[in-house]
Length: 435
Ligand SMILES: *Cc1c(COP(=O)(O)O)cnc(C)c1O
Image 1 (cartoon, rainbow, N blue to C red):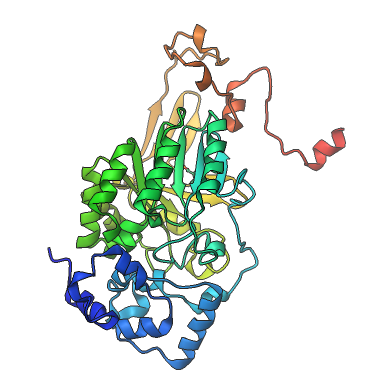
Image 2 (cartoon, rainbow, N blue to C red):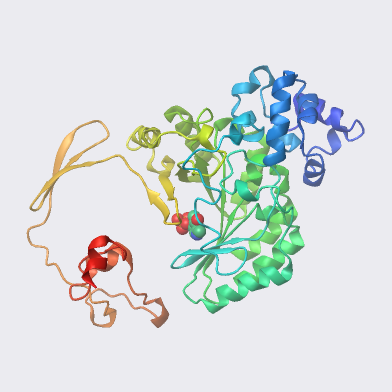
């Protein structure tokens, strides 16, 4: 398949005649020529916006900057750009300046749950480590919109080492998720250094990278990068395709290089009004991803970040999409639909309801076709109480000391008999009356 097409050639010519076809696949050239203003956008795509609209977009850019790689720009269908899914994700909309009553700058409270700069420790056994403050393409729907274009910087070694030190001091952390910004904005040398520091921590069992490069700048996936990444198995990379149109010959090649190197690929999509809020689009995207060895991982409900109101769908749309997939297509194709809880509660999975009713030892279920069925539970199951004493349990789990964690949340009240019987918020009126 041809990777350098006519439209790409036209765009290259307008940026730099001499570069012609030789530079298109050079990721540094792409970065250097990222489109950051409306005039250049119009010139490269050969479209003319009405003057009033141009002005509105310029105003939007002063609050939320723009940056689009020539590659990603070349995917826009210029005949119908206004409704184009790539255009909508890459080019500002004046709607971004509309701040709703429930919108927040940092809805996931990532800054509050940050014990050291650049690191969020929310879940018991894993951390989010933002090792880059920059991206090759500024997604209009970015959940960290408050930071976009803020400081175009990569944290220095001293700052990174603070995060590394924190992870070292917390033996419960077994999974480190490198994100940003985009970690693949780092130079190979720097990335190699970060990976070597993190992977050298004895209790870190796996590293994950979150990167949109395979979508917006697939030429970043070079042989050199692959050689470097290969050294840090098990390595997982989650990327961010939102629409089947983003899966091109170039992105397929990047995914193939990563998969061939044994890097395990996943995809996180965001449900976006006007872009992919359609069961058939998400299903088609999932099928294309699986063909390219990428497992759909999460489908996110759009966060309550300021400036994203026009992208949000009702939750029912997400449930409808999942309903249209479970049973109808491969289980592997179905992402987990999640709402990242405002206030920092973490990701909450949302599913259509399959349990219709329940009686003693009998569950009534419905399937994807609407068939109602029943499942008889065993009469003879000998329930036993877990007191977390694995040494003396007939189930042969041989834990090595440190793995023994105390239970939290719902699991805690499911398990314990003698201690808590309920989870009660501390500040209810009823509780304050008690003391
Ligand atoms: C999403 C996220 C993770 C990883 O969550 P998984 O469900 O394990 O993929 C970890 N930390 C933070 C702060 C996150 O937002």
